[in-house]
Length: 259
Length: 341
Image (cartoon, rainbow over all chains, first blue to last red; front, side, top):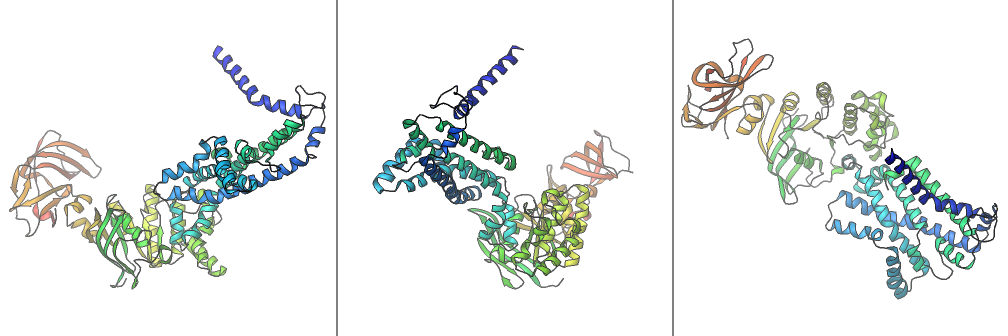
């Protein structure tokens, strides 16, 4: 009986710990006051409306969307063939390739950001936008490879041989037989990559330059200057966006299978 | 069936990396024949089949089909069909689209594709299933789809990998009959791989017994069953008492033993099925170690100076109790004469 009580207490504490910040942010977003505060002073939607009026938010939102969409697409274009090769062929140095590809998951973002800044942006004079694009692609690549590999491993390889014997070339077989059967895995990889890129802070922090900032970086920057609840409102909006994407993905794809 | 060679494997050596799986194999198959490649796992039968499809490139040797050298023709241009052991249906396509897959690649007119797919599905009795997905079919139905998918391509040779092994006993008999009917109706040359001697005996016109990457014996089911040429084949088809020939008799655990007649000249071994051993009379004596009732007969395991002997007697004959002594004989006139031990 005591152990049962204890587990309820633990569960409640964990839930408070996980959901607490979210509740605070949403409450702060709906505040009627002038500064970021909890408990909120009054109730209003004005800070939520304000979010859409801040010019820099709009620009950085567009940049973040661009990076999340095209960075993820680029990672998939690179990652799907890697995943395919790794699952279907015994490659020389296969293990090494896998390790290198998954390195950005293991290496702290701060280090990746610093390395890209020091050895890519500064010496080669790459523009901030391009640097961010490369960085986000590299960061998403391991997720893309991992998720697509999981669905490839569930796909029998003899169906490809069957297609070849029926007259299909190897390349055509990939598009006609392999791709249609791993499309939910690819979609799952896209969503995971999108969310990862969109929420990315440490790497973007190093690479963001004057006037070119991703949304999370812009939020930090905004807060340092203007301490009003619109940041909380934006955070709450983004949280709802992420949650609905993942919810839909789980509902229609069984997203948790892949992650 | 003509006498001319249709599919010819000549001096074929097949390897995975440095591991040689099949060495210098020679085999000629006539048009319309139904051939079984029979052997235990690892004997090279599946490897040989993969080489015929083009999925495996030979290390050396030559494959000709219908007069053309196809040794290096890629698998998608060979006009060879393969029914996979796992069926390998395309999970995202309906039954109809699975069967139509190869025809669509040929860019045939839609009318003709529809006709041929319907005819193919009718042939395997699945006309009503054309809008189902493979996952909604039973194993037996999936196999029929796989068969139809290969047949509609009108392949020059149809290969089948362990076609009956994934089916239960009742379906197996049904599918066996079905395969024979399809082969008769379409006249397609068929080569199937199996490890099950009963399957090979029941289905094939000719059986190719393989062992460790080489052909042990090629012959009709009757030949292979009654006249095995080697110890391996004899053992594989149920000759359980096998002795090497020595002098005018056989070599046993008790040394050379004479039989009631000399073995044929050139024989290197003699083999008896359990039911070829005479029990109750004869020059040898053994002790019954075990007896088992097997419906129409009784099976005995004897301990004898020659070594262990397996015998089988009609169930109507008097039974021998375990522990009792019994006289037996290995009649040389009934033995299979082995050329190789």
